[in-house]
Image 1: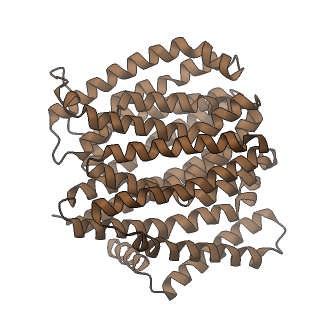
Image 2: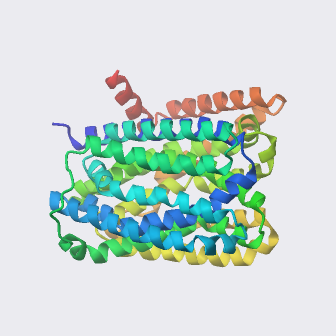
Image 3: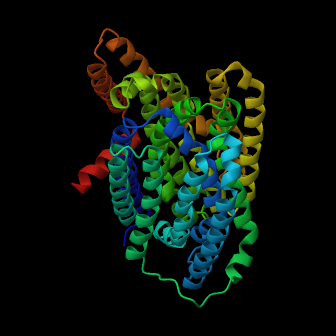
Length: 478
C-alpha cells in the first residue's frame, strides 16, 4: 500500500506529465493551425468561449466537486449525478441553440449563428463524462487521465490541422473542441469500473444541493472572470482583431499557469480531504503544496514574459505582434493564479463552498469596477489594472486559510516570496546577458537555456528542499 506522500508524489508526477505534455502538444498544434488563420477567425471562437464555459458549469452544477469531497462515494451517487448532468446538458443545448441568433446580434457577427450551434455540441457531449471524470479524480487515476487527455488532444488537434490546411478557417477550431469532447468521453468509460444504470434517484442531488449550488455560482463567476475581457472587447470595440489579439495573449498565459495549476489541482482536493481531520498535518501538507507551486509557477510565467516577443514571432508570426505586450502583462499576474487553485481546494475540502463563492463573487465585482474605470484608456492600460488587482486579491483568501488550518500570512510569504524573487532575478539577469543577440530564433533558445540553468543553479546553491525531494523522486523512479 502506498502512503499519502507516495500517492501525492505519483499524482504530481502524472499531473506534470499530463499538463506539461498537453501544453507542448497544444503549442505545436496551435502554431500549425494559427498560421493558417487570422485574428478575426480566432476572435469569432473567442467570443463564444464564455457561453460554452458557463453552459458547462451549469450542466455540472458543482455535483462532481461534491462527489470528490465525499470520503467514499457510492455507485448510486455517481449514477444520480450522471443522469442529472445529461438532463441539464440537453436542456441547455436546446436553449442555446434557440439563442444563437441573439448571440450573433449581440456581437454584430452574423457568422456566429451557425458556428455557435455547432460549437455548443461540445458541452452537451461533455455532460456524459462528468461523473466518470469525478470518479477518476477521486481515485487519483492520474496515469489514466493523462493517457485519455493526450489521446483526445492528438486526435482533435489532427482534425483541426487538416481542416485549417484545407481553408476551413474558424470551423477547424470548432471541430477541434467537439472531437476532443467526444474522445474524452470514450476514454473515461473505457477506464472507469463504475458504469451508469437506469436505476437511479435524485436523492443525492437534493442532499448536496446547497453545497453544489455554491460551487456552481463560483464556477460561473470564475468563467465570467476568465472570459470577461473577451466579451467586453467584442462589444465595445466591435473589432474581431482586437478580441483575437487579447484572446491569443490570454490563451498562452493560461496554458502556462494551467500547466502548474492543473498539476497541483489534480491531487490537491483528494489529498486535503484525506487529512482534514488532522489540522497540524493538513497545514504541513498545504504549505508543501504551496512551496511546490511557487517553485514552478514563478520561473515558468516570468520566463514566458521574458521570451514573449521571440516566442510569438517564432511560432505564430508577425501578424500577432500586437498581442505580445498583453501577454507579458498577463504573465506577471498569471504566476499567482495556481496559488488561487490551492486556496480554493482548501476551503472546498472543508465543505466551505460558501467562502469560495463569496470571495470569487467579490473578485468579479471588483474587476468589473476596474474595467469600467480603465477601459477608455485603451486595452493595454485596462489589462495592467486587471492584472495588478488579480495579484492583490490573493490577500483576500488569507483570513480563511488562517481560520481553517491556522495558516498565518507571514508563513505564506515565507513559502512563496523567495521563489518569486529568485524567478524575477533570474529573468532580469538573463535579459541583460542576452540583450546583444539579434536573431530571434537563437535568442529564444539561448534565453530559455540560460534562465533554466540559472534557476536550477540558484536552487541547488540554496539547497532548496522542494528541488531535492523532486530529484530524489525522479531518481527513485529511474
